[in-house]
Length: 346
Figure (tube, rainbow, N blue to C red):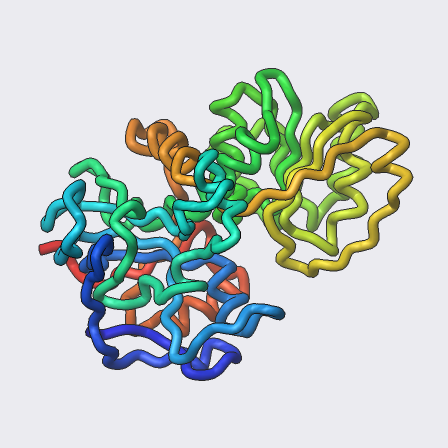
């Protein structure tokens, strides 16, 4: 099969387009003929080399995938060859205590497709049959491939973990990124007032088109000052901050007493300064969240399938141009998700 892979960690130049052996399904697995995948920041971290994570090489990236089931393992009876599907990127053992209570993200063997297993930058993808979700005929493969990781992450962070309620004010930093785009739509669906902070006019206009109520270009103004002005110095109820070092200290000050700060990542650095006085004196909750179990993915997909929510796709590129797609993403030169068209629909 054709695939994009790397044999050493480094910049986009380590990504190679070539031939690898196609996978065969084991007992409970399926093979998908991949039609599309999409880029996530996780791809960049794994390609560069993430501290504490050893990836057997060569490795194929790509957590998100959509396509057609082409082969079934012997024990698979709930999926059929020819089904149009997307992939749930969360990998779990399905047997531990966390999995038994439906919280696979706390599984001792938790993993992510494209990080802990070969991913979707390839013509064929092997995944457990429980990780495929049928998609409506009306949903394009490109749209389906742009949904899973960012929408399951945002849903778990804001609804399951963050307990977002109608009438609350929520500040979303990095609001024009993949997770931020999902967060805006989920927050509006929940009945919250959305403060969207992003960098540059184009990104601000994207946030406006998604329904954000208060728009903050933090290249032009201080988001903390604007939040205080808009809330009468009260602060927001919830702040979503996966930016990390550059914004963290202001995020703690942007929420009201008793408020919640939600995080699912740290794209500008994992070691920000934290003034603990804001945490204990103002009784703030700092809530971490990673990915989400299938129940959270299905909850989000219900609204995607009805058209109430959708990803914003900034660029569609062919498989052999993945290295250039990584360069564009690192340079923040694409508005919305970068989708890779792996093969055409037959």
